[in-house]
Length: 412
Image 1 (spheres, rainbow, N blue to C red):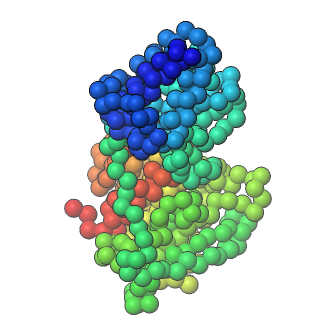
Image 2: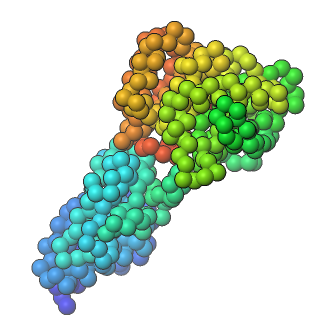
Image 3: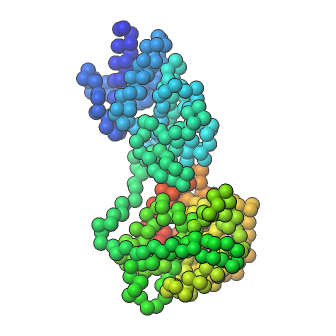
């Protein structure tokens, strides 16, 4: 079949061109012997045009399948400084990408089928340093991208992950750096104020036995998430060992209920005065009998992400003589019609320090920057960070190395 042979040679040559010029990982794997470096020229959209130009539909489909197989074998990931190519090959009527780029909408971003083939594709504009989490939605079924071996664990399971060329991951933490490990106590706290049992985890630094004076403390909303999905515990060990932060007590709130059908997180974290009183009063007062926790608000911080960021901000505003610092990651300040901003304006005593961060892809950028401006105008010492990422644990975990030293270290 000369038409198929000739057409496939053209497509394969142009695919290799993209692989070499676009920085594709593993581009040499399985490359046909007949290809010459002189053919390295065209971007992927033009490869698609060449494939579409094959008149015979059967030949086009066969060629698309061969191209898809080569891309899979090559572990190809097409990226430039401003975009990435996502593609899918298989029997399907519709394929969408859902993820950080579109607020996880299952229908907002369709992949385009190359006519008379089973190959779908789309070019996604992205910042050069972006990191994207996503899934493919194939005829309504949510799946990991079979063409992308890179995945990351999130609060709702595993996602495919795409890192753009200028993205720089945080330095990995290992147990081999000699940092003494703190211990983690699991407690079930019976609250008279809340009329229920609350599970918490308490981080006790390895150096606590050497300190007779009370230690600083950090209360963490969604504490289970920070412990399971971020390097928080290991990072505390290392930052303390490196004298970047003092030894501190970590109080990790577990938002999950014994009854999974009851959404306590939404009710507790949504500017709930009773829960704020529990965190600042009953819980801390009880834990002081067991752990060396300082009463000094300048040594006392609370943090959280999303609704947990609202919790951290609200508790600090309602109990400024207890918490002198807070951190909010991708805070959901839109809750209750932005009323958290009115509380800030009405507060006579504001925190000494505040840390805020947000991704720029369908995250809390607008609300977080507004809070930054509001607190800064009132004299609060602020650290604000924006990154080209989305609303997820990998994003939040990567900022902890900045967040914790700002709150507890020597602030420049």
